[in-house]
Image (cartoon, rainbow, N blue to C red; front, side, top):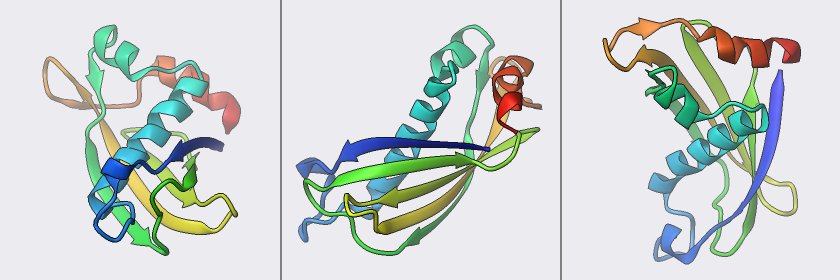
Amino acid sequence: MLSFDYKKRVRYGETDMMGYLYYGNYAQIYEIGRVEAMRSLGLSYKLLEDKYRIIMPVVHVDARFVLPAKYDEELTIRTILPELPSRMITFINEIYNADGVKLHHAIVKLFFVEMDSGKKIRCPEYMLEKLRPLF
């Protein structure tokens, strides 16, 4: 299993009139967590796209808003990969405030798609090589 934490502060432009992180911005936070978790393993979305011609579109999001994240609050984005991917990769995102209180929980599922053909494929071997030691 992979579990990776990344810190981010809520910026003014990400909030609504109440000073809360606008609900529509949570998907960007999931992406930050995903990209940085993969980067920590030496995996890069850019390499996946440029060299291997593979994209990973999001096909499912299940989100639970527990408590609001507030303007200027430092958040910990915890990204968990609970299982080795096959045709789909599933990430669990948990967002905590500086006191360690859980504010948000989401499950995000993505497919692997060959850019040129548009066909769904299995997780690329080069990615599996980096992930297998964690499981």
